[in-house]
Image (cartoon, rainbow, N blue to C red; front, side, top):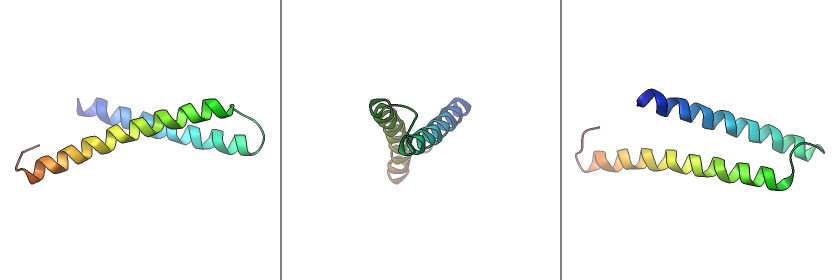
Length: 68
């Protein structure tokens, strides 16, 4: 399960890099449309929110004395 989680985080990171490249291409006059980039950023934000929520839950569990 831990390997799958790491793989998904790597895919999320690669997706974020892809979006950064597409934003640069958009600024230079090409690439995806505004709507596609916006949807991509929303998906990346959602994925990062799940990552933060997981880390926060583990941290709060540590304060309550739970073992991970």
